[in-house]
Amino acid sequence: MKNSSTPQGDLSAQIAASIRDAIIAGDLIVDARLPSEAELAEQFKVSRPTVREALKRLAAQALIRTQRGATGGAFVNHLKYPDAYAQQITTSTLLLSMNEVSIATACEARFALERACTRLSAERRSADHLATMRAEMFRQSQPGLSDEAFCASDVAFHRALVDGAQNPVMSYQLAGAVEAMQPLMNMITFTARSREKIVALHGQIADALEAQNAADADAALTELEAYTISLARDVLDAHARR
Amino acid sequence: MKNSSTPQGDLSAQIAASIRDAIIAGDLIVDARLPSEAELAEQFKVSRPTVREALKRLAAQALIRTQRGATGGAFVNHLKYPDAYAQQITTSTLLLSMNEVSIATACEARFALERACTRLSAERRSADHLATMRAEMFRQSQPGLSDEAFCASDVAFHRALVDGAQNPVMSYQLAGAVEAMQPLMNMITFTARSREKIVALHGQIADALEAQNAADADAALTELEAYTISLARDVLDAHARR
DNA sequence: GACTTTTATATGTCTGACAATTGATTTTGA
DNA sequence: TCAAAATCAATTGTCAGACATATAAAAGTC
Image 1 (cartoon, chains in turn orange, red, brown, cyan):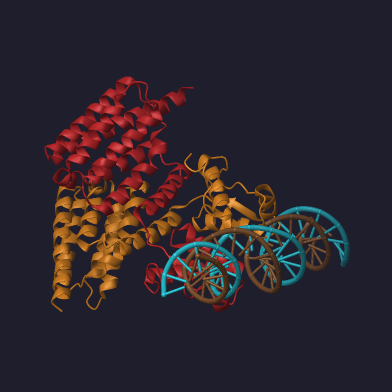
Image 2 (cartoon, chains in turn red, brown, blue, orange):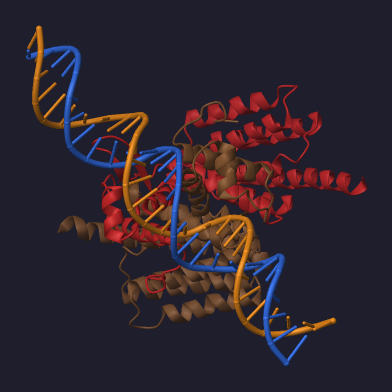
């Protein structure tokens, strides 16, 4: 629609775009086998290495998979949630690290996104989700935990919150976003005292979800956001004073 | 951390992963030039075509760009928001179309995500954002508009809402998500009467944001969600009856 | 009939070459 | 001397052909 009239970039890029459009348009359905590299080379009037470069581009986006052997070839991939996660996380992580996003902005986005699913999560969370939250809270209260491990557990806690909404689309969008922000969050130092407060707030959130009280969960999340940003400010101040 | 001990996949995939990790870790900063293909081939003990396939994988993810000529080569790309959007949208679109996500689930996610930013948008929206919303509402009330065009304008309206929060991270995450759901929304047929009601609700949202009243905007969004889902149900019923 | 071997087909990789592009260098001309 | 033009060199883009390797199906063997 946009670039059919203006062939841009290398041949391999053009061929990749052509095949990608066919997949998105539904001309190539899931698990359909593409012509062999030799046949594609003939169709597009290019050499096999060029076709291969195009196929590798698509493989990098998890649009196709390749199999060797007699019945092998390139197949349209059934895009799975984990694949999409992985891509979104690398993209988002790089985007955040390259665009001078402040911790405050990232925090604001993260908690706003999480609040988006408290209502649903309060309504639908299973015992499993609550158990995961409690388990992560226990881990977070262990002494001697590194800042990175604390952050990772924090992500797991919030991921359980999101998954509690029982909406795969929200899980995909939000969990990816939250995970991508982890490197930024890792810059915050968590003292024993601050961890204590965070775990207490996590407890409030878990309690509220267990009681199916979305408003309380929202309030606790908002308080957690403010506290996290204040911790981040301390780090920045310490940096500035040096 | 996860795959350093288990080299998996083709050589080109391994090399791509290796370079990608270096970029993410910050060993290769933005605009840094990678070694030439010949040098990379020597370093990794592979042939140039293999290196090229690896580079194409990275180029497909917008991690690097290549330039021909004497001072050319592969450079670490400064990932821009538009690039990231484009990727997220294609990925999300395929994910949604391949995983039998119901319109109801998509709607639920979409409006929950949008409600995530009403508070910020009510607080910070500029005159520009309000003007965009009004303009899209005007377009939506034009007779003779196709369902696709109506949906596209709908996306533009909601995008202005999201942008009003003045948080680039949220804009990136949410606008991408909303746009990816457009194909699903396109399945809904909008009669003149339903359009009228939707535009009225859009008006309520715009009014609420102009008055900086987040609660009213939330309520209107919730009503819009319920109405959209009821429209979708009609479409499904019609399908079932045939 | 079950197991083994062969074979065909496909991707994965290598070698070597040439074309195209483009900044840098050298030459040329006034 | 300086500027324009020609040349050069480095690098990516593309090609052709070959061999290695994996894999499922076909053929052969007991």
